[in-house]
Length: 121
Image 1 (cartoon, rainbow, N blue to C red):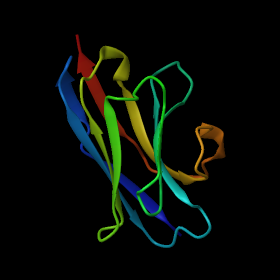
Image 2 (cartoon, rainbow, N blue to C red):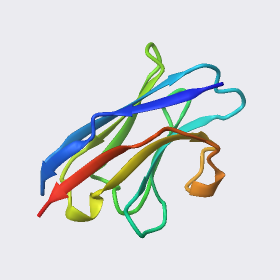
Image 3 (tube, rainbow, N blue to C red):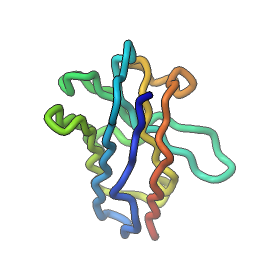
Image 4 (tube, rainbow, N blue to C red):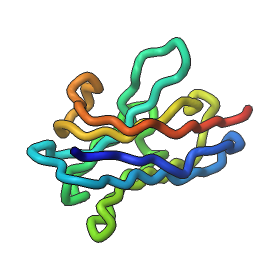
């Protein structure tokens, strides 16, 4: 019923910035949080960031803390991920997801199609 559409991915240089967006349509039901989760080829999913429906409370993965910022635009039902000081290890497909306010990636039940982020060294 709810759909997530990511955008804003692309290529960036080391130290550069990108801003991802995720637009949600439909009802989120009882799922209290939106999150960004990434996955590189051959690697496990990695939690990036999450925010509650209000956009006030936030969680960050250790690898992106201090560099990435998640925010919520409730008027457009959209969550953003501002990525600064990008590193090659940030290269991955970034997925928007709905689920609990948690760092556990397997707890999220609704996923977007993902957007590719490539950081060149």
